[in-house]
Image (cartoon, rainbow, N blue to C red; front, side, top):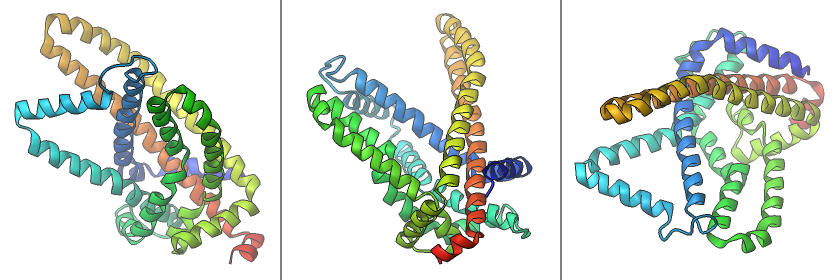
Length: 308
């Protein structure tokens, strides 16, 4: 398998199928961006108000809950807030999995020359939704993101001395998490394209990664570099308009408060759209890269001997 050829083909597919990005990648990107911003904001202020730096009487979470409850009580917004929270929570939990199953199937079928349309992806996603959701929930426990979250929680609440003692445990857990994540790289594709059960897909993925570890490792590194470059591009694109809007908003805040609020909303909306757009493109491209890689590897004779 030629890794560079796979990446070039995946990028060509991404450019030729922009509708798939808007239908199956953009909205999950919006949800992930929103949750990511809220999560990073919470982590920043939680550390800032923790005994490590500020030693505040109340934790940041307590202050947030108190302020939110006070705001909802003042304007009687409990019912809309509950409905919005439930809808967004369900969408965040279910929609990315549904869209990923749809994308993998659509990419594979288009690669094989089948005549499929974007609307068919809904059926494809629904058919593999439950096992794919089960897999995503299973791997969250040992993902690097979860381990870092647990380490941050322990550091904030238990202190530096205890964290120093626990640090080797978190490092070992992080290394194990990275290895397992790499071994299970192709699990989603066995689930979606070969209709394997979750555990069977994880086992076959580990075999496939071991057989083709050079290609898998190379593509993982290339995708990490590409992802970093996309993040840098997003920050660069947002930097200039953000500075301009912030300058205008600062002036408006002292002159016309309502105008300052409007400018703040425009900044947030523009930033969310741009970040979600680039993230959606990267999401479609990444799914194309790994789907095409999986199909190429599964067509090789040695792979068929060991996997089947």
